[in-house]
Length: 245
Ligand code: FPP
Image (cartoon, rainbow, N blue to C red):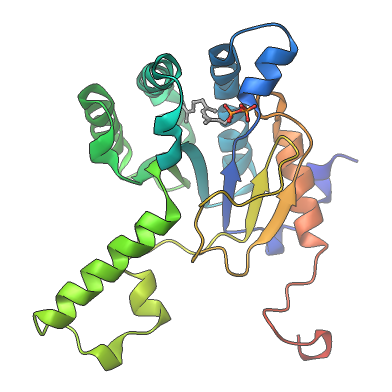
């Protein structure tokens, strides 16, 4: 029986976040350049996205480029930006056929103009698709997101739009880039690294973490289904005892 067949339809994660790690190491391992790994990572993105659509996961958020990734060699950064533009252009039909709505989180204004334009066009084109929301974290850093939210709230308090007593976790969450999205239920990171790497720190307070040894280009939808199967066999207590659930 495949993992997909073993999944309980009434206990699917609503939101899956992924750290797509290991492209460079995978490429080096077979004697190729790092960018070859990123190029092959695109098919794994398709596997994850189509896997989510296939079983009914509503939100998929992918860490595609962190704010720290700007420090990589210029050539790799440029190649990644080009890959993003080309992939979005090529995958438009996949988004439309699968009912996928594209969104972004992060400092999009840092990206090259061509990237920004392709993203804006694809977001506009897919905005009424409703099967799955695919969010790309680009030039994203969670600490910067928390600082931005704090500034926005402070500004509202200073201008009298918001009373300090009204600030609670919901109000705070509504000022994050992810406003309106449920928190991730499951976070998957490939490549054997066991870190969060400045990803969705506020949103992942109660997220189940799954670390896979596989490198991202090797990721297949069956890996996604296996991770969801393992997720379904965990007990999420949210601070309560087993007996209280
Ligand atoms: C991490 O692997 C991966 C990235 C920084 C980029 C992710 C990009 C893709 C999967 C391709 C394009 C994606 C989209 C959405 C079009 P790494 O380079 O850090 O690997 P390493 O740790 O082995 O060096």
